[in-house]
Length: 182
Image (cartoon, rainbow, N blue to C red; front, side, top):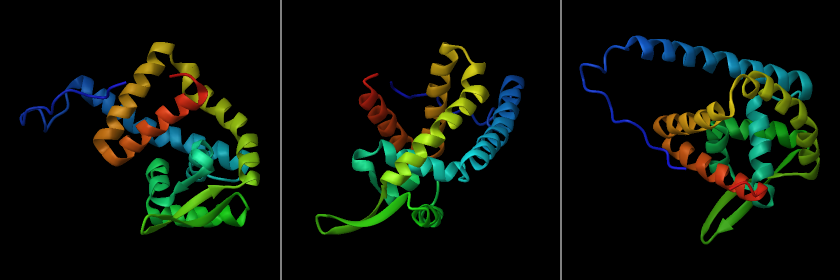
């Protein structure tokens, strides 16, 4: 699925929102605050981890051999390497993730690896997380709106963070290949 969008507005339109844009911006801004807080609260209540940590575990579970370079993982989890390193340390302390050194040619890098214990914990956490995501998002949308949501979200991520957008596109493609839904 290609992700492209309209061209940038002319200078006179760039300094003011239209009525439609203002309403859309206000709604998007409210969603960007409310939705992550609701998801984070559910995960903390049910699993003791936050959404960032859940995103790390989920990305590792979908990765080949349940391992990923820390720099790529930071992109997919939408966090800095420093934040990721602190989170991985917390996950290591729980026995859910391990770090290992990997060599790619002459370059050494650190990978995070999801342990069997981490995969089991994630599987048990996923049911409640999916229920909450359905309640908050998908139960409120038609199937066409779900497809539109993906298209719009991918376009906005590409505009805001091109590297994250590219990593997201690859992760979505990998997930659909794994599930045979492509």
